[in-house]
Each structure stands twice: as C-alpha cells, then as structure tokens.
Image (tube, rainbow, N blue to C red; front, side, top):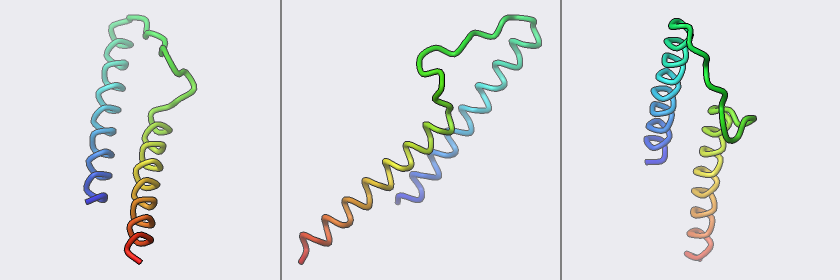
Length: 72
C-alpha cells in the first residue's frame, strides 16, 4: 500500500509542478512580472517531496520495528 501512496504522491507532485511552470510561462509570454516566491525561499518543491517520503518511510519503519518488537 505504501508503494501506491508513494506513486500517488509523485503523480500529484508532477501535476502540480507542470501547472506551476505552465502558469509562470503564460505570465512571461504576456509580459507580466512573475511574482517572487513568498515564505520559505530556499525550500524547493523537490526538497519538500523528498522530506515527505523520508517521513513516510521512516514512520513505516518505526511502526514495523515496534510491531515486531511487541509481538515477541
């Protein structure tokens, strides 16, 4: 199930990323100024996605180890 959740997360990320880039490209074609990114400036979307994966799989490993330890 974790594989499917990860696949869904990657698909949603790519859809969001393509929409984001397409919106910025349309604004550039129209000659509008592209707004500066607010909030966490140094945090890129791929960094956020990788952090979510680390937390997701880390949580699964902790759950699996605790479950195996309590079953003894």
